[in-house]
Length: 332
Image (cartoon, rainbow, N blue to C red; front, side):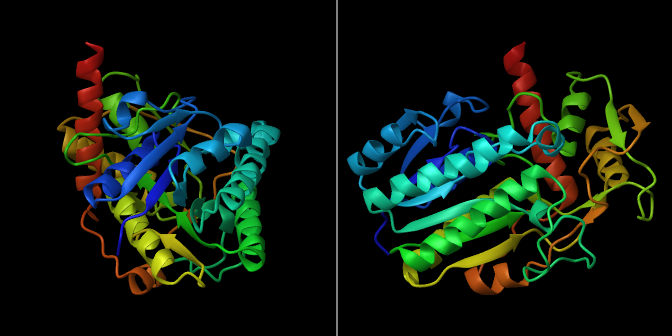
């Protein structure tokens, strides 16, 4: 397969930067758009063309697509914090749904033929059955999930009417960092558990808040399916290859390992990897959090031929902690 040029939106951010690394490692031509609101310019490898712009700015995006003859987009840019979406839904529908509408318009005008979309398990809401398959009802319980589901609808309708196909990858909980230390999660105001716990381990935070201990789970805390960010990036490369090989086909796939860990299990794992315990403070539930989200990943494995390489929770924590220590050394 001859490599085409791929635009990565949000390529200076956490997951997007790992996708850029995976594409580079696999020999694809990559260009990046990011507004740097939550990304790091230094996360983009030397030699990768970069445009600092908002994806909703069609006057900036469309010429950039044409200039680099982009034929595929990996779309990561957007807002991702569930409680913030409950507090400020207008921001989320703007940054996620409305901005993606503009991006699709620019892509259609510039002749882009494939779009790979960063979706989320939040589209399922609080599912009745776990593990969750792709054909479970989509009933988001927060504006973040709703804004992502609306984008999936837009892509499906546009793919039926225009000459492009798409893949929607519904992430479960993404964690870890590049095992070679090239990138990791570095955005401001992190809320994801493993990131917060690692920041606590290196002294950036005083403690970890545990939001809710009365959920209908074995230890009362939320259960999540954690996927290593580098495994997820590899899945994106496999998904891109599938879109190109089957131009008339689109797909929606869950991205997880098919097993979950509770908040307390993750914190116990962090204590073991760190060699000492961090402080935990038990508190009330956080708005918009379902009790349990665990994927069925059978379709991902079968459709893409993908298999995880890093599906060990302590390995995920170890890579995340190594990255956090690197950031701490840079601050010092």
